[in-house]
Length: 41
Image (cartoon, rainbow, N blue to C red; front, side):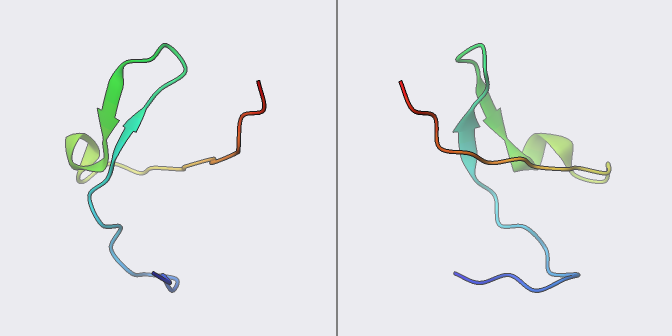
């Protein structure tokens, strides 16, 4: 899937740095910056 500037982000479920569930839908209407990286353990 490719997103363009101004597109709405699809709802995704992620895990934060403390292993708690996190979803886009919990932050609707607020500015959001996502930084995604591949963790190498």
